[in-house]
Image (cartoon, rainbow, N blue to C red; front, side, top):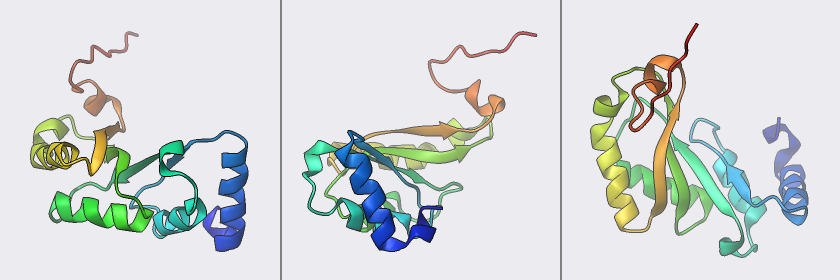
Length: 138
């Protein structure tokens, strides 16, 4: 829906939100073109006054460092506050995406991202999330 506002309308929406205290903005590579629109809408605002989160589409393709640099370019920022692996469903996700998680840890060490995690979709994956004792009793 926001894309349908066009850049001018979207920028007005983001600035209205910012002016009314919203300081957290989220996007994803799967929201085609929205990162660039968000970058334009946030241009000129102090970078340390808001937080950016984006999501890395899965299954992964390509080098994580290259993709993270692309995300930063699209968002017009030196760093991303939070980067999540997006839409993880299999209970084997922790091992399936180990290489990608290591790439994110490397990006964090270089301060290209400040923290990283996972967007879990579904109980099988959630039950395997590290340090989670999540269960459902019937």
